Amino acid sequence: MQPTKRTILRARPYFSDEDIADALTRIDQSLRTGQLLMGPAVEEFEIIFAQTVGVKYAIAVSSGTAALEIALRCIGIEDREIIVPTETFVASANSVLLAGGLPVFAEIHPDTLCLDLADVVRRIGPKTAGVMAVHMAGLIQPDIEALLQVCQRHGLFLIEDAAHAHGAEIKGRKAGSLGKAGCFSFYPTKLMTTGEGGMITTDDADLAELARSYRNHGAAAHGSEYVRVSTNWRLPEISAILGLVQLRHLEGFVERRNQIAVQYDQALAVTSGIRPLFDHLEFDTRHSYWNYLAVLDEDIDRVELARLLRDEYAIPIAWPYDPPCHLQPVFRDALGCQPGELPQSEHALRHHIALPMHVVLSDDDVSYIVAGLRATLPRARTA
Ligand SMILES: Cc1ncc(COP(=O)(O)O)c(C=O)c1O
Image (cartoon, rainbow, N blue to C red; front, side):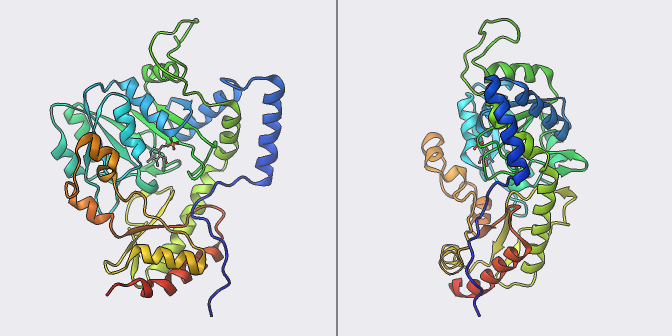
């Protein structure tokens, strides 16, 4: 018998009743004092976020994309190349171009969908200034130490696009504390949200000071002068208030996502046609599980599977990010990228899917999703 259809969202933010009440109280204060920008909530959010990541400085900005562009501007990448995994949201590569540099797309490793270290090494040239590691779906690539050593050997910086990785960890070090700067997004589907917003994390005092200037029209650190061309990348107080209530649950959110991932892992291990991208115990890292990625058998039609799941079970699935960056029209035009240039990534991304993942999913919802998969997978086979 088919289970009763229920509405499953693929991703969503969560605010408890208590959090909503707390946020509204603080927003009320902010509205009454009239301090809507650059006030105590932004300052507190930055201090607690920096402590959470284990860095000296955190600079709140208007989006994850702004965080990346500002960090790259602070480092200075004019006319230099930055190695970026092709498997990421376009914002990672756009930020390089917007900061005056050139993204060079590299292969991802099929086992992690993060940068392939060997391919990074192959792409280092005289114009390379740095490498952007994207912690795909919330996984810090297990060989990040080796990547850092390669960067050090070649005099390159490492910047972390940690948009998916709030709370992710490797050997006791948090995402956002591993390179020259970490860049987070607080978009509503992320591990924690401020509506729109972003954060730069760093141990570098000069970079932090420069980032504060860039986010505020190029203002000098002291006095009323403007000392560089920039724009408005500030985070409003109301957004920071939302960030503060979300931040106190980050650990719990990551924990719950890991529990859901274990439930998926166990169920997929005995489901034919699909497997987890990796065994979550295989790597000595703490995944944040922004997304739960699974791999389909090659003869499963992903589009047909998505249609069956949506129409019959109201279960949404997706495949972030296929097409990968080098095959997006914007970069094909701007950079002359061609299909077949990154064959390992193109192949790896043909068969992966992201299952629903957020903290509002109950164990029963996960069982329902697995039941939906088991019922539809055999019918989505092409052979
Ligand atoms: C990997 C990655 N980088 C950067 C961003 C940009 O973040 P924002 O949407 O906050 O600008 C995103 C957002 O989805 C992302 O997934």
